Image (cartoon, rainbow, N blue to C red; front, side, top):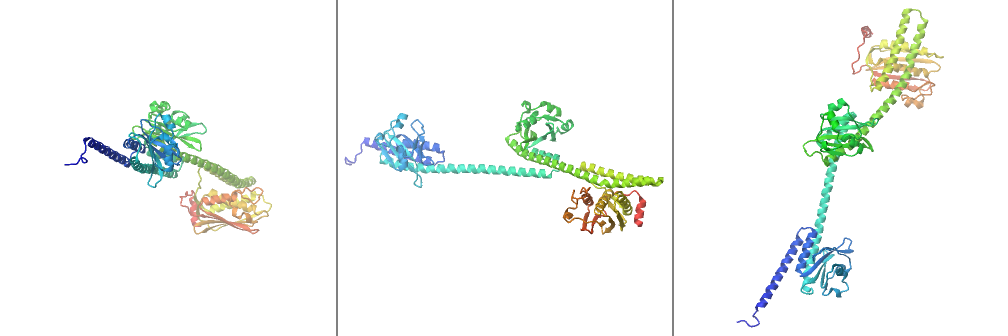
Length: 619
């Protein structure tokens, strides 16, 4: 039979059961807190849940969790319970929580108002009455204080040592959870930044690939129109449209005209030669405002011109248009119409892609225009230079014609006079061919007329003309002409231009012999080349001009010299795929050597005089 000391009364059993239930509740709350702290919840939600459980577990009225700021100078409340969410900021060392964060020591106060570290002003502002306080520092794995947990007003009285131990354990778990959460969010943020950087890098790569492809298209283009057509087709392929146009601004008139068009409206636009005013239609609006436009419902957009659609017979379902701007100059616009495979029409991604293409197109147009202007300037300069050369070379046929005219005036025989008339007319034909050459060059044409020439006739004709030219110069000291035609067969050359070569060199030689001398011409063959050598007994080429003798406008101080004679010689010889060179000695004369291929790849014109061919074969 149990002793009286071993008998447990019913009230005691009830008390023990109540204590057991309280401990089980505490254990369950600790488990819930541990599970919450180990979860990957958002930090704010996690701490709100933890503080709610800690308040319940500690049997407190409210609890507050303070975290240290990044610079370690301030505490701020992340979560507060008790029916009100307040953001409380404290300087480190200020108030109970500030003192705990600074000292890393536990504070357990039965009467808050009896402690000088407590700040009653907080109660006065909130209307709350603080009695007991338990404040615990939160330390991470490295032992560094990262904040403090503060619980207020335990319902059963002051907080005891058991409460301290429990809150200490919870504070440690909370600190680790906070650090892990910060690390997790930091990693997530870094990953997001990396993904954004990767996406931007991939976009840059796509842009670079696109620019490279556009650059290749530009390099393949021969003319500006070819360039614009290639760019327009490329833009349509990339954006996915069935029609498009590049519209350029005419600087002189200020009108917009369609330079490149793809789609069903092309024929109508070409036939009508349609021009728009700046501000007219979607294109005009884009050029005027220098802004891109996405119009997925043209019929309800005030900028769209129905009149233009009716005129060309094309009614677009949607329109994307971007200005062409280079160095702050509006060149026009690129317009894409009728987005394919997307009923919603164009979007911002399409607009960004077209802006990228338009940027390259604008630069290409500007470069092409600048190139055309430079070519035009060079052509005008070349025309001027060529005119100077022609005017220079006109002296020869004019001198020869003048000589024949003087001879014709002295003879009375009608047949002989008729021969002189033919010779004079031949010189006028020669002058006419020179002017035609300039006009052909002005039209962008530059060629030589290669045909079969029988050298015995050519040399005889040149000899007679040179005699007339030397006679026409009315020299005080005459120049003796010697011609040695060793090769008398057939050659393929431009007869008129080779006449100019010979006369220019002859004139140069005469001017180099102011006291008279001998000018010798030799015509020979060297393997596959027809070779002319022109030797004079003049003063020779000055040493300082030897390396520039074939440059335009280089002269040795002759009173009427233009410095174009030998430059024209070099140009004509090179047109014949030949070479010209010289050797000279001061006071010992100069020898010019001209070598051109006897036969050319191009088919020559057949001579009209068959007897000449038989005579050449016999010779």
